[in-house]
Image (cartoon, rainbow, N blue to C red; front, side):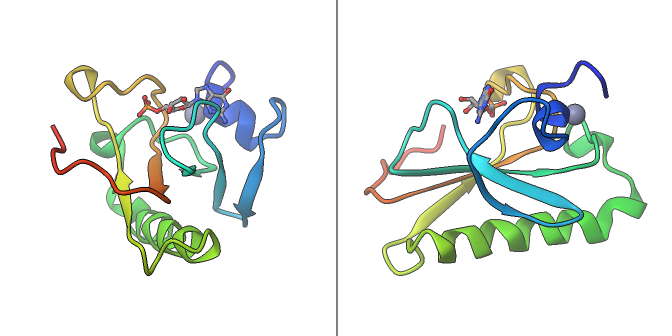
Length: 114
Ligand code: 5GP
Ligand code: ZN
């Protein structure tokens, strides 16, 4: 999608600090990190959110999740622990309408999630 920020990052039109990339997904550092490790994992294909995903996206979504785990390993936060967050819709404060996972770690996080 032409006007989508994360599509433009995936296409390399907007620079990002890349952590991992393959044909299907890109992982890059959040511009406003909320933890020492704060990496966004996105599908390169535009999917606006969880409810926009189709049956044919199942393998992509599984790969997205496993990439989040691989990123946690690369960042060295598997032992200390990490959180994977995906905001969906206005109440959850989703600001970019392109499906993404936040991988957060490197500090002890609060017990509340909402
Ligand atoms: P959301 O609020 O939709 O769950 O997450 C969007 C995330 O994208 C936010 O954490 C925000 O800091 C990050 N973000 C917004 N614009 C950019 C950008 O241009 N580059 C990078 N690397 N992250 C961005
Ligand atoms: Zn997009």
